[in-house]
Length: 379
Image 1: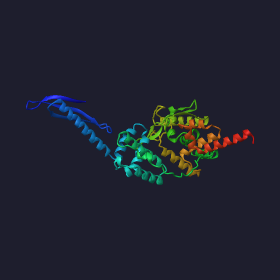
Image 2 (image 1 turned 30 degrees about the vertical axis):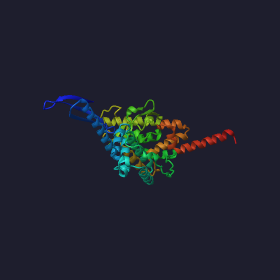
Image 3 (image 1 turned 120 degrees about the vertical axis):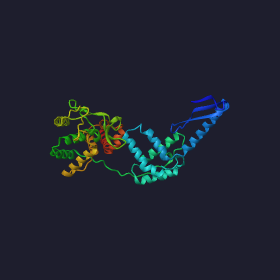
Image 4 (image 1 turned 180 degrees about the vertical axis):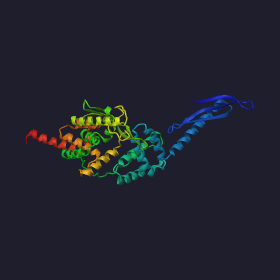
């Protein structure tokens, strides 16, 4: 608040002054304060205060409209970081810095036209599969600018998204026979830790990041249950850390079969023996099931390397860690499980995600309905 005060000047005459808050920049939130003196009357001081306030606000508006897209983008990121996972924030920041700022970053936010944006998006479409994601984040920055009265329209809302033919790629996954061959070869390695990892990967449909973040407190040997409540992720500095699961639906309970339970139990006992030899006493909620030599969690890169080495050594059908998840979903459907239960087991937020991700299941489900109808009507 501004204060008006009467004071005595050096010559002994009375005068008025004001000091305090003048205005706030609505974009940065910074408050402006000032002190002025030498006014003959309080009304004169008040008029001077109002004039200064108008000048400050006018000056701020001019300076704000001169801000570049990159400046506004970074201001948006400062708010965005508090609304998403660190890994999501890092990827978003990287998209802006690598794909957007080099093109329009130095241009004043209020001078960027529809045509500039269209040319930029067209160039992305020729090079990148996920160009629409770049467009989406660019649009969010413009919306932020509109919210703070820096621009009247969002030019990204008026662009035409280029149509791009996407190659139809069949999801690669193992058949039952492929899976048997894989585990027969894995058995020859005589490495219980790796056996447990790939058993969970193939027989639960969990993400590798979820498996590597598991502690023994997440496993109920007696109830044959796994509590999925965290996963490996990257922080802002690209360090791999244990964080939240991919989304709320990813927090779930997964039942396991007795064979998987028994293998887990054997590994738990062996790990306990190894910790005892190393003079380590670790609480269950702190002991990672898959621990490295420093008793820390492995990175997904380590698990990928295990898999590549197995494939190369035994000349196995190529597959990735994530494709074991496709394998699990496919074999679940073949076993007779409905799509809704598959969705819940995989931790998808909606059944649409399951159907879009595993289009081969959707196609098979449609074919099954057609056959069922034909069998019902009898001709």
